[in-house]
Length: 331
Image (cartoon, rainbow, N blue to C red; front, side, top):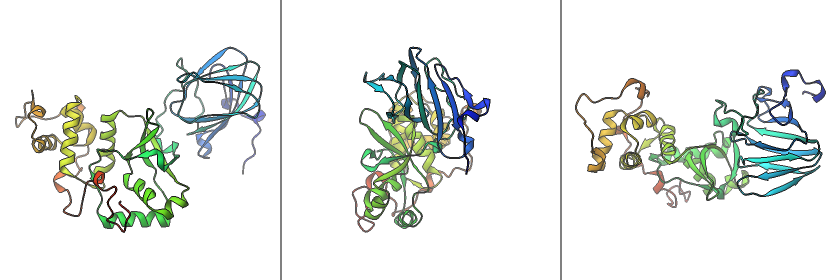
């Protein structure tokens, strides 16, 4: 147990991140899984703040101010006993009309020395996304349509048993689709389906799935999915070749594909041959000496070749939802 008085914080925990004074009560190194600050904002005009790498909630203890959501234009009065929640990392203005004191909670916690940059953000850290796990309602989560990974029925049944007995020990990896207000699965499709289809588990978890959120465009989401899955599952070759075709059509070159989804040049060529689209080979020279430059290709030599895909019991996960193969679970 610890008891902390803000007035007795060490000097390195009192930071002025532009436009305010932040007393850093709980930081990453304190090991609580969330951060907490006491922030004092003087009446000095509008402050531009944006936390793309953190979720933040602020409780107003004293003073009076105004919060503006820059994207929507909505304006909120901030006064004692008011809490504002930046659950989608909204860029915002804060203006104090008199000195305002806020108690702020961060997920993930601050490291300790963050200050606002010109665009109102804290400099991005190298923290892994797992430090910012958040519960997301199951109805706001959607499967992707490009996952080539598959899991055989016995392993799927074991995964369900594991979640029943041990709970969720790994979050599902997602990206946030702001336009549709949905979280799209990058990795963890089967953990998502188990929650969706198991009455016992969904009731126990209160309909929430633990997720981390990546900031990726569509081609990078595909690469992330494949990187997450190749080492531990089997791939549907036809779908994998279709993904290679999509990436090529997006303008991704062979070196990009090799580097980002862990393929060898031979595998990329094989996927193009399976697809059989002449456009994939346009302006390409695949002589025996063709290779990837060392500085463009960083992948483990131990990655299993796609030719080792499993047999008849494996199906593409995107085709499994809605089927009732595992006692009605539908995977």
